[in-house]
Structure formats: C-alpha cells, structure tokens
Image 1: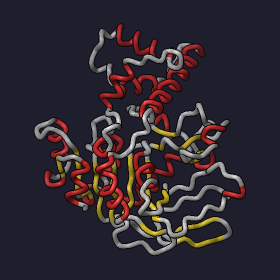
Image 2: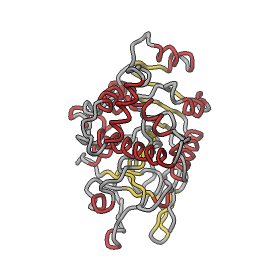
Image 3: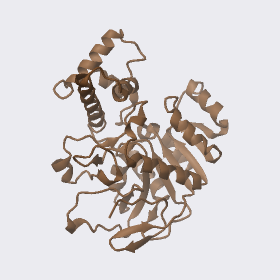
Image 4: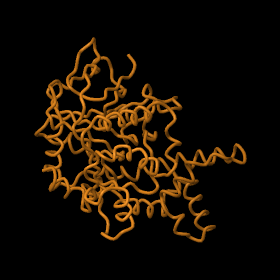
Length: 352
C-alpha cells in the first residue's frame, strides 16, 4: 500500500495491516532550531565550529576535490571573511546551475556529494547525545506533551517541529527506560523489514510526534531513486543491519546549512512535510520557537511564519541584549514575545 501520512493523532483505526489516523488538532506547537540542539548537547558542533573544521579538512583521500576547492577559493579571495563561512561555501557549491561544460558539472556534482557527506560525518562523528544532567528533565518535558498510542490524547498534546536533522531526541527518548517510547514522524516512511518483522506494534508506547522539516540523519533514499519522494525514502534505525548492507556510503536525506534550500525541494517528501506543518499551524492555538531567531538568510521561513504571527507566544534565542539579531526580532514581533535566554533554561522555567 502507498505511503500514508496523517495530520493529527487521536486513535488508530485498523483496516487490514495499515492504520489511518482520525484528525485532532494540537493545542501547542513547539518549533526547535539549532540553538535548542546546542543548548541540550555540549558535543553538538556550532556553525562556527563547523566552519573552522571545514576550512581545515585533513582527509584529502575522501574529500580531495572539496579541500582543493576551498583552498583555491580562499586564496583567490584573500581569506575574505564573508566567504569563509560554511553557509556561504555550501550555498555556492549547492546552488550552482550554470556550467561551462560537462566536465565542470561533474566536478560540482563531486563537490556537492563530498560536502554533504562531510557535514553528515562531522555531525555524527561522536554520535552527539543530550548532556547527562539534562536527560531526565527533558524527557519529562516531552512525556507530558505526548500520548499513549491507541488512546485519546490529553489536552496537553503538543507537536514538535524542528529544523534540525540531528538524532539527539531519538537517542535521548529511546534510551529512557521509564517510558516505552516510539517516534511518530507524522509521515509514514518505508523500512527494510522482512515479512516476519513487518508487523511491529506500538501498543502501549508513548508516541513522540516529531515533524522534521529539513529531513533527518536516519532517512535515506532508496538505491536507484533520483528524487526524495515519500515512496522511496527509508527510515533507518541505528541498530538496523540494513543501514550497513544498503546505505553504508550513502548520504541521508537532509537540507544542509545553505541559503539555496530550494535546490532540495524536488520530489514529494519536503512538499508533504511543509504542507503538514502549515495545516498544523493553522489549527493550533499557540506556537513557541525554541532556539530559532529567524535569521536573515531564512527569508522564506520568515514569510511563512508571519502568517501565524498572532499565535506566536515565545521566541527563545540566546544573544547579547543589544545585538542586531535581538533588535531585528523586536521590530518583527512584540518585545514581550522575545525571551533572551538559554533554550534548556527556558524549558525548565516555563514548561517544567
């Protein structure tokens, strides 16, 4: 049967082997940005750290063309600051559409592959996890806003939307023994399972509803597919042997830190994700941004979320009080909505 997706969860209705969900809105939506990941995990690299590492890649065997491109570009630009950021380097490599000849196109295809592979490997190098002292309060925060599969959700049911593609929350919740967690990515993704294992049940599991708008480091496109469609994107668990049999050298389905995000929206996957997000935001009562400050480079996101300005309660960002980012936010939104503090501290103070 084709992939299915649902908007809101009340209870499953069994029809054969598949489950359809009856619509129910989420009272709150929490939207997580990179500031959230860095706040809860000291091992999660910042953009500044990624930039430094990208400019100093030592692995020329696997990233020969990428290291050469960066070295030549920096030399020609005399180390100009506006060029030496991972966002700018990524945008140039990923958005180039005019090529002098086929050889140049192949060269940029190699650069694109090596860049995406490097970002993936750098983020997952040490399998970042939530800091030990933050695991219990954070998992409690999520548990109180989730639902038991197969039951009517509480009035506190919330949807978590993220721009992050890391696996911090997957690792956190699946390691918490006090709850039997299952992840609901809202969309129905494929899995490489034999018939004997395809009847997985979520009975009595606590469902964490998590919409990942920029993809995820445990999603992969099936071999031979040239688009990110719902029908050919597969979800890989970390212990799944299929990850090593089928996708050992593959790049996950994710949108990197680049301004040219539209280059990745070919296919149905991201279109469905963003359509669901819009519908959920239309139906919810309250929206909270945690660790996301509407950067100027994400103008598309700003226009998208301004439609729901009246529902936005909190925008949590950690910056110096007089920074240009804070001043810009206060022009865009009521000052009372801007909370300048650490993301984890905000959760403890406002949602404990």
